[in-house]
Image 1 (cartoon, rainbow, N blue to C red):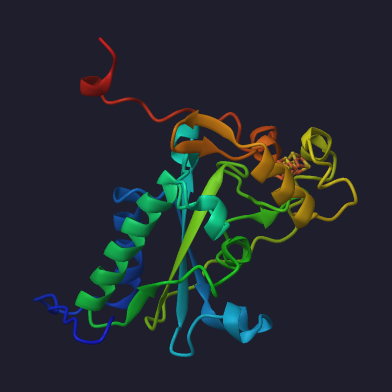
Image 2 (image 1 turned 120 degrees about the vertical axis):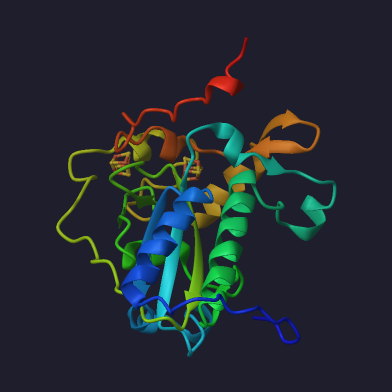
Length: 244
Ligand code: SF4
Ligand code: SF4
């Protein structure tokens, strides 16, 4: 919590950590996330200082949102994008940002410290997803989840609440008999058996799909071809939102 900002504590008997963990999961899903994982902060000790959570962190909570429609991956493409050398956030990130802020606030009302993890410097989000038991890294260098394949975007938040960690998934290799993303990549950025970030970014930045004056889509070939989780049904559209 930032200095000078006070959060009033929730009234009523304190929740135990088990109840709190269950509540976090329920609320995160209600507030827009599709996946929620918990990682013991010690699992991040393998990374350098800038890519670890702050020392007071006991648990890293990782939230994922299913990219069920490309509209979620639209990036606001402002005139300053080229000069700043980075696009502003995509829609789906705004949803997860809001969700992680609400979860942080809820944890503070329960008497814990919590805050969304920054991007730069920050955690390696895909690795955080692995450490929180959400999936494994695929040949396309993305987190592959059982439920949604790689069509998932992530956000993390740190807290000093000691919440039970999810198990890291082991012994699962979705890519053993598959090479679809490697073949589909228009930049050949996966063909050496290792992700070539430079070639990928160079291709992506020079081949943005313009949707409107200020909105673009980045290349998503390596995630859209992946067969894992592809049979997932679209969430039903509420009756009052169906086209007449
Ligand atoms: S985002 Fe596009 S260019 Fe980059 S690795 Fe995936 S398919 Fe290749
Ligand atoms: S497309 Fe195939 S090889 Fe690529 S990540 Fe998905 S399962 Fe693995």
